[in-house]
Amino acid sequence: MYQSIASFVALISLLDCSAAQSSLLSASRATPASSRAATSTYSQSDVPTGTAIPGDYDDAYRPQVHFSPPQGFMNDPNGMFVDANGTYHLYYQYNPAANVAGRQHWGHATSQDLYTWTNQPIAIFPGGPTEGVFSGSAVVDVNNTSGFFPNQTNGVVAVYTINVPENQTQHIAYSHDGGYSFIKYADNPVISPGGTNPTQFRDPKVIWDVSTQRWVMVIAYPIDFEIGIFSSPNLINWTAESNFSHYGVTGLQYECPNLVEIPVQDSNLSESMYAMLISINPGAPLGGSITEYFLGSFNGTHFDALDSTVRFTDFSKDNYAGQFFYGIPSDEDQVTLNWASNWQYTNVVPTAGEELGDGFRSAMTVPRGHYIKNLTRFGPSLISYPWNIMSIVESELASNNSLDNGTVLLDYSNVKSGAVYFEANITGLTTSESLDGTLNFTFSSSVSGESISGGTFISNGDVWLDRGHTDGFSNPFFTDKFSATGLYNEDDGSWRLSGIIDRSIIEIFLNGGELSASSVFFPTRPLDTMALRVSGLNSTATASVGVWALKAAWLNQADVNGTVSGNVTSGGNSTRLGGMRLL
Ligand SMILES: *[C@@H]1O[C@H](CO)[C@@H](O)[C@H](O)[C@H]1NC(C)=O
Ligand SMILES: *[C@@H]1O[C@H](CO)[C@@H](O)[C@H](O)[C@H]1NC(C)=O
Ligand SMILES: *[C@@H]1O[C@H](CO)[C@@H](O)[C@H](O)[C@H]1NC(C)=O
Ligand SMILES: *[C@@H]1O[C@H](CO)[C@@H](O)[C@H](O)[C@H]1NC(C)=O
Ligand SMILES: *[C@@H]1O[C@H](CO)[C@@H](O)[C@H](O)[C@H]1NC(C)=O
Ligand SMILES: *[C@@H]1O[C@H](CO)[C@@H](O)[C@H](O)[C@H]1NC(C)=O
Ligand SMILES: *[C@@H]1O[C@H](CO)[C@@H](O)[C@H](O)[C@H]1NC(C)=O
Ligand SMILES: *[C@@H]1O[C@H](CO)[C@@H](O)[C@H](O)[C@H]1NC(C)=O
Ligand SMILES: *[C@@H]1O[C@H](CO)[C@@H](O)[C@H](O)[C@H]1NC(C)=O
Ligand SMILES: *[C@@H]1O[C@H](CO)[C@@H](O)[C@H](O)[C@H]1NC(C)=O
Ligand SMILES: *[C@@H]1O[C@H](CO)[C@@H](O)[C@H](O)[C@H]1NC(C)=O
Ligand SMILES: *[C@@H]1O[C@H](CO)[C@@H](O)[C@H](O)[C@H]1NC(C)=O
Image 1 (tube, helix red, strand yellow):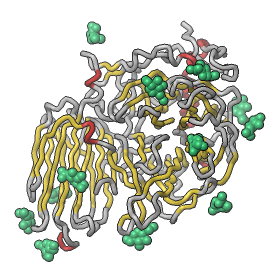
Image 2 (cartoon, rainbow, N blue to C red):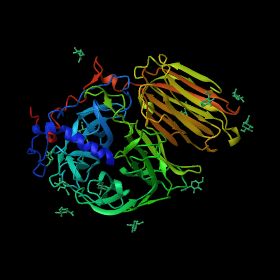
Image 3 (cartoon, rainbow, N blue to C red):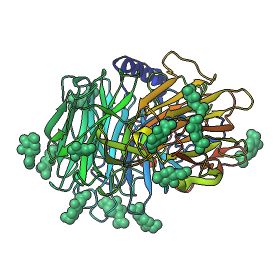
Image 4 (tube, rainbow, N blue to C red):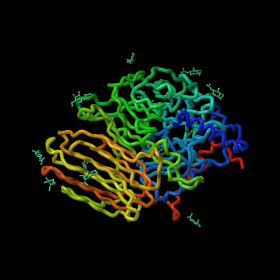
């Protein structure tokens, strides 16, 4: 969850701004489902309960294969899990009442493919006027370790931070209906403030540790630059086991940690390793927010990093607070969604106006698949690729298996989504002497000439992305050029660049995700023309290129006005926590 020292003050004032509504608050309401249920709920007349919020998904900036909230403001992904039927649940930090951060709820959406989403009613509401339901995670308590689920194997427990001006504490809530509605645990909090400052303790992420048959939580002590590791037999009683402290780039805060077991591709490494991911904000090397990670081992109580190398998940600056889905078997590639924005400018980007309902703020990245690969000289690294991207392809726009030193030019103005996926593989790079040439892409507007471009120099491994030639947004922190350097691997004999562009967000991947970047961008006119250029290849090398139109996953569900209404069948399901509308 977000909270710089400066923005903490801003949050309080945002909450203060909402004090006008507090006369409409209900103090408490008996919960029907269980005698252990919390009684503290809170109704806000301007926040809908029991019904999905509709959104305009036909805006020029509205991504079509990326998740974005119907309206209002979204930041961190929360509570991500996949249920026994293969339904993915995404919760997210949500301000349903304004287009800027504040008044944190858990928004909710579900998907079968992680590209096509159904908006659900808000899942978790604050319990009082100064409360924020900050970031956290969710698990399926299949064995009923918590005791909340005597008669079912699909009980869901959410574990999250409650923020009040005085402190941050960890709470749980449980769901009997597979994650659509939650009952707050009566004896919250389950963890009281720790660390040097009671207001700085947040973002619990819980996994099941098979070796110890216990739940394990990682949680940030942000300003202490520490990640706490806790264990629990039942999700209720938590024991502090160890701290992972002062690793890597600290910035001004650690946030949103993840600990996850990830399969390793290379046979000379063990079959899996653990990754510890830490999001930093503010103070990232490129400014604002970014995510770093460490690889190592976990023995049930301690995470031991393999080395002290700092590695980043992305080389641009719109990838923060990513979370791994709970429930994907540890021998399969693990999957994240990541918040595709940056606290330096997220509250002012032009996807929304002043009024609620006028646009939206923030999108998630596409789902990223992850495994670990031992890269030349870099050593073990987290690979990050667009997960199952071909599943959302609508049609092929171009294909050429021997482009050589050539150009693919294409007009995609008739693609309904405005979203395109491309791959360009240079093969036949038999030795390092054969590394030569460049591979570039440009997406531009045939009307305004604005463009997003990027590419790679095959000779030295540099890869770059430039969002500077777009005129819809200007801000000193909206850095416009990014680059990183990859290393050629002789065993591969290839150099590959792929990417997804989706109206106002681009994600690119070098060599299948050895390096990746996510950037939002804001042209004044829609981009509609693509050029992919290859030149200077060694005569032993050739280029193979494919470009595909992606489905309009959101617009395909919209009515004539571009409105997607969300789940209209489950109304009433999630009113329990929301309490009554007091109008
Ligand atoms: C899976 O779907 C079945 C049939 O719709 C439903 O009864 C069951 O509750 C679902 N399971 C989960 C884990 O949601
Ligand atoms: C559930 O119980 C089984 C059998 O004891 C065990 O193998 C598994 O790890 C447990 N999983 C969870 C999430 O409790
Ligand atoms: C299962 O148990 C919970 C809690 O006791 C109860 O609310 C729910 O109605 C029960 N469900 C079924 C299908 O019996
Ligand atoms: C956190 O602050 C609230 C509000 O002042 C207070 O009621 C509560 O007791 C505090 N919790 C802990 C565990 O200190
Ligand atoms: C958990 O803590 C509660 C009090 O907070 C205590 O009554 C209970 O015995 C504990 N359970 C376990 C399994 O330690
Ligand atoms: C990674 O591969 C290199 C050889 O390229 C090898 O020396 C190194 O031991 C490997 N790393 C691990 C952790 O196995
Ligand atoms: C886990 O590792 C820590 C430190 O590396 C060590 O102190 C502890 O004894 C280990 N625990 C087990 C169960 O091996
Ligand atoms: C092309 O690559 C081969 C090795 O595959 C190398 O011998 C040759 O010098 C390269 N040609 C040029 C023009 O660099
Ligand atoms: C790709 O872009 C780079 C950097 O602007 C440039 O040096 C190179 O000539 C371009 N290559 C092609 C094929 O356009
Ligand atoms: C591509 O261009 C390079 C440099 O001009 C040249 O050496 C190479 O032969 C060309 N490749 C093909 C297939 O024409
Ligand atoms: C590029 O290479 C990858 C990995 O080998 C392959 O899956 C993909 O089909 C290739 N794409 C094209 C356009 O050749
Ligand atoms: C579309 O918008 C128009 C004008 O606001 C309205 O009259 C019409 O009912 C809307 N259609 C739907 C399906 O909501």
